[in-house]
Image 1: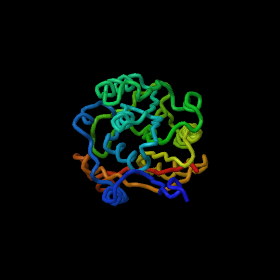
Image 2: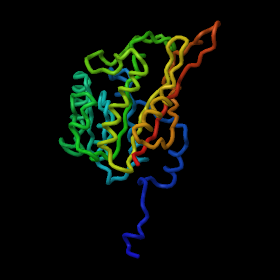
Image 3: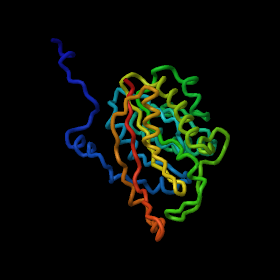
Length: 267
């Protein structure tokens, strides 16, 4: 047997202690930086979260990192700082400009290590070549929840901008899930075989009705052809500093302080 044949296949390049630490199913040590907290995006995730996911689910040979809902550009920033090529799609021009500003301030690997498309994620299969992405990580809109009053902490309403093409403007929940399904069909086409797609979501409530966003999206992803591989719980309780007794005293309600990182794999 040749040396190449003997070489053990690596899932990633973590050492043993990192592997053990990150394999715990609840991640409670992820924090936004001061710079990230200062940005005016309603639902951005920390660069440290994206960096860890790239570390866990790729090797250094996996160069192309896709984010269908780029927002303020955190995924592309993490990819850039790891020597990867980030590709982002975003309909809101204000967020595109914010992402470009953030990325231009860091030039560790030159100016051509990312690309931003001010376009709907529905255009992904029309813009990117089939099986050209090595990894996908994203956080889709929380339906139209961000247009409602925040009852958990009474903070001001902050939405995605309410512009044309914004999925959070869809009123019907099932139509919203179907619209996400169409986008992830495109992601499936451009993702290489055997590669991962990580989707960050939170379950939702409107009044008396609970919407299990994570499980509904997971079923949709399986219908597309993805393997539903696992779930990481992102514990965000330290991000909430103004929680109150929801429903008190008439009905007991839960303050949701965690999100789901849904792990999907293309066969």
